[in-house]
Length: 494
RNA sequence: GGCGCGGUACCCAAGUGGUAAGGGAGAGGUCUGCAAAACCUUUAUACGUCGGUUCGAUUCCGACCCGCGCCUCCA
Image 1 (cartoon, protein in one colour):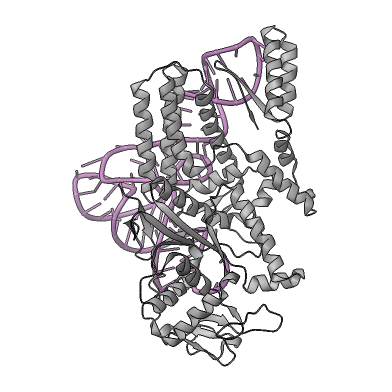
Image 2 (image 1 turned 135 degrees about the vertical axis):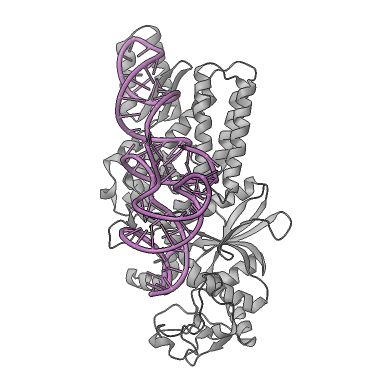
């Protein structure tokens, strides 16, 4: 069964097949690096990451490009306020974004930057002017002439016939032929970053970079273009208009949009005080894996309500999966195979695949894996699991985690890095006791913990329970959770 | 105003024209020197309200109520 994906362009769920052979070419509208990334950003990028990972798991080769917008109005404004150059300003936030994405196990696509493609953009605009799709105004700005592209509105399902009334005309844009015409290139203004180019001095307007860079890297027609739902209009609509006018060919075939999330039931906004960057959340003591899991839990086209409670629940779910994995990896199983378990693992694997094939239904995939966890745990308890079974179960669990990417327990070092950043930035007051508690578990190395556990085991064997309890208490205080099970002592970092 | 999405148990959240996945939380239990953890079991006479279609609707249609999104910078 092929992957079926919702395509914003057709407004339908369609079979996804690459245009060329087995290679998927996709482009993501990446961040504008003017501030630290917030969880809304990361919901989108995690949705894309899930798509990306699943395409690879499905056997496709992948060419995935994402832009970094490193010049725009906000950047110019903020860097001026901060009193640093645009370059220096964006470098800082690009680095932060990439670190945060990595903390969330978001795989990094090939990156392209707007400021590194100024010449290509100027060429592209010149070409549009030649073909009559764009025009220059007296101040040296360039605009796209919407009247020349009748399909305008096909992505956002807007009908622009006779809809010019109500559109505001910016003071700076008094020379536009039509109020809906959008900027391709902005003439220089005093104090703003500006480039020399074959179409004159200035800087690229907000939509041009994605058209130019995506086609530059992926070709005039490519498979998939992704971003947040807010980009449908005007950003992606404008990209389509520019690109298809320039080439006369269909631009992206699939348009993938992630829905906005809510925070505590309301739209996330700075004024409501529910605006969370990833770093804020970590400083409050939330693990990156919990955040990723929660953001991945609700299928990308549904509204996701991001709450503190949800984060706790996600943490518990991840723990359960990790415990299950730990049981399988450390358990002592006899040689052999139980056909019932092999069947369970196989069926679960199919269910997971079917769930992702169904427009990336992550919630269904979770349902499948937890059904397996429950049945397999019961089987372990009853002694029905043998070595080959444990292996089969782990294989299915890994299949799940190749997409979800939450099993590996490396939260502590990631959180440590963010704590270190807070200190370096003079934000140590934002480091909560909750985070400090979690970081404690990072202080002991695996060897140190194992040593302590050997001491504890020895004390228990000698029935010196007071001694063993003392060691256990010490480890607990260090954030190390001890589990004494039939299969032996297991531990993990809290 | 235009276009669109959603309202499922205490919370989060899938899903289906034939009477409801999964997770969390609660309760009970197993294991254990104790504890913790882990594990198991259990928890919706019905899916916003009211009508309609149907042998049968939570699932289709209509109206209404409520929440949310886009139309303007925003992932």
